[in-house]
Image 1 (cartoon, one colour):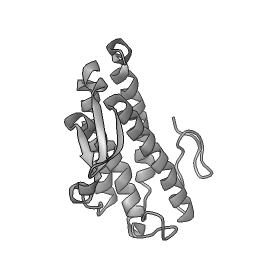
Image 2 (tube, helix red, strand yellow):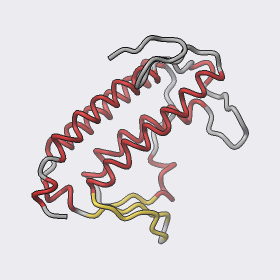
Image 3 (tube, one colour):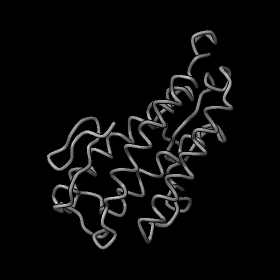
Length: 173
């Protein structure tokens, strides 16, 4: 990619990330801590693992600019413990979001062009530019936030408005 094409990336990605962070906060603040061990199916993540994963994905944005790769074989050792409270969960989201926004703000077109790799031992899972990784992480977070909204529905927790009204709440811009 040409650097001139990448120059506006922080200006484009930063508002998108900030908007998605607010929507994610709305959903995460409703996740019932007492149900963190609940899972809708044996093959599904527990609610606690899912909310942690959503928050960790946002943390991955800053990590993408601080490293050249991630080896998933050591991920469990590096991952923070699941949150013990909603306040802790939202604090992690705020900290990871602030770090992600700072990383995007500080990034140059050249750093966006650099290749970043995800692997499992020697197996390459993906090798993308940092710009592509950031977009992937935002999309991955949105995907799991949608999954989380289904968990809330199954637990009979009111689902907040996200991109429009939910069955429980009018749209909040």
